[in-house]
Image (cartoon, rainbow, N blue to C red; front, side, top):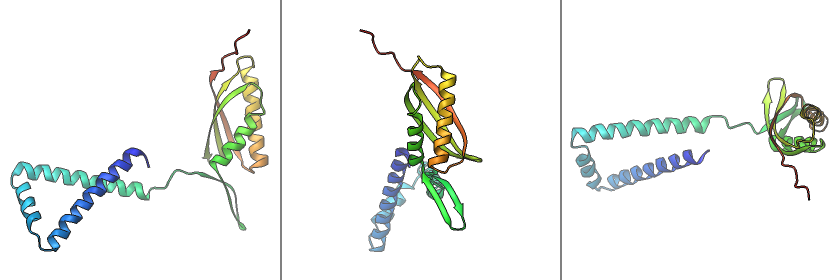
Length: 176
């Protein structure tokens, strides 16, 4: 959950705590909260404002409820699903295999992998910073081949696609 939704949830919970305190006070026989409510909703303008706030709070409650029961982002990839059981691998584990494969190719300086489940297998998206002294088509083909091969051999994963985006060229070291 993002920081925005955490702050909304915090405010919503504080409002519920305040409402609970009012209900407890009324249950204990204190009538002051009823007088405050009557004063607050004594004018048409305040009733419209209160109704608007009530609608907004109800919508926020529905949104929070939907977000609570929505499925979380997939963090696992199914390696094998058979009668004897299910084998899964976490996305960070798959990324480590990808990093190991890419490091075998010369000329790649930085790697930012993203791994998702595709219809026909794992989709690996790589953002690379490369050395400008190497031929990009040959280097990226080698990266694609190594990544697919290592994921299939080590992880037992079916690789649907290895996408590569060459984002930048590494600066050449200064000649002295």
